[in-house]
Length: 239
Image (cartoon, rainbow, N blue to C red; front, side, top):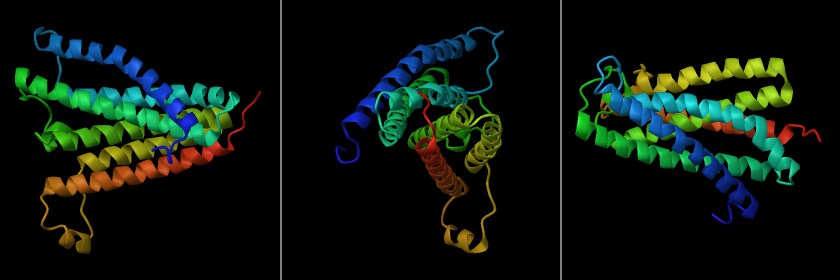
């Protein structure tokens, strides 16, 4: 790890991890309370189980966090002598560590809600129904989607703050496409090319969906990282 991250990037990563963890620690209890109340108050309707509701909220939350951090952190760190490379690496690793910890916490809470309230509700195409009782798979999906949504928010924020209105609007259009693809890969059964279909014929439909979702998400994430690294490397910093 010391070869991959120097002292400065580790400091940035720790700062980001603690900051995002503090924000999540304030927000997550509100959703937990709402979820519990929904099971005892008939007037409160909820159609999703704990995991599906949490991942829906977390994706929106991470998108907003990405936009907020893009508008403040890069300029603050770079003006204080942190290189763009160290800033980028620290922010992304700190965010990823926070999302990893959140993914574990959500899976633990999801298991508790199943034990206490059962898992009798939720739409058939929700992730927890497609990957029923596959907690490690759901943990990985939660992690990848939250990181992707954060990166998309970061892309939008950087485009508007550094390059202006029209590049910002283009980043929104690109983000809509990437969001649609990331959701499609995990929720839709795709017709594979004949050669690939024959190669994967020994897998179940759910396993094929997982493989396509994993490959598609990793490809989208790599694309976002490359775009963000290029933007951060070229962005001007005004005194």
